[in-house]
Amino acid sequence: MTRIDRRALFTSGAAAALLAATGTSLAATPRAGGALRLALPRESGLLDLVARGAVLDCLTEIAPDGLLRAELASAWESHEGARVWRFELRQDVLFHDGTALQAADVVDSLQGRSVAGGDRMTVAVLDPQRVEIHLSQPNPHLPYLLAGPGYVIAPGGAVDLPLAQLVGSGCYRVERAQGGRHFRATKVAGHYKEGQAGWVDSLEVIVIPDAHVRAEALRDGFVDVAALPQPAELLKRGGFLYHPSAEDMALAARSDVGLPRVVGQQSALDDGRIAERWWRL
Image (cartoon, rainbow, N blue to C red; front, side, top):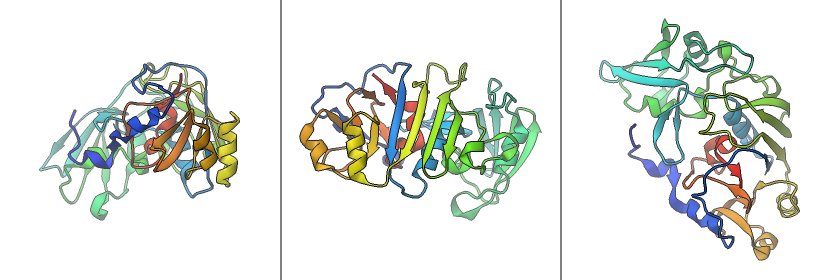
């Protein structure tokens, strides 16, 4: 694997500040089980970011430690000075509707999508488990870019469906969803990431517009993680974890929430991967 040169864009050692006064170790081994409940503001796209990150996968993934790693792809190589890329797909991936991942699904999902600089991808099937991506200009960063939420894969390319209808290959399948208000998903049994991600049994995301109400919900145990702008009363109580720090807070969590030693910072919600990466202690 290749370490990203611009690592600061993807990860932050500031996650160590989450230790707060609880003494909880971020290095604790993830454990399976339990539920993770998040309270988010009605900011455009936040619920969608978390939900889609739980349900849909990409060809590649940026790990919490900043490393590029395979997700739906198992290997890739570049040709013609990084203008042509070939991706080999995993053969153990099932979508939530029971169908197997095929190269045609990748083509349907990515065809014509733009990458940095406005270049549009031309994607072709080489065989049922391999695709080839053509760019008009060389781009050595394409595998990194394809880890972004704009390049998810769904059967038949149906990546833009409403949340309640979304089918993917992620660690969680949609149980119910109400656009902009509520989302619930349950863990997929026998998932190809079993033992590596997708620790909790269920994920619930609740939109609570008022920050003070979100803080009360966290304080009283109705949710486990909340997006909060420095709620003074919560800070006074102590016993909570703060990301990236109590002085520059984006998220607050109960002390029985476990998270990676390093947390991605492209977004406050662990780059949309919070559902599969965080766990309950």
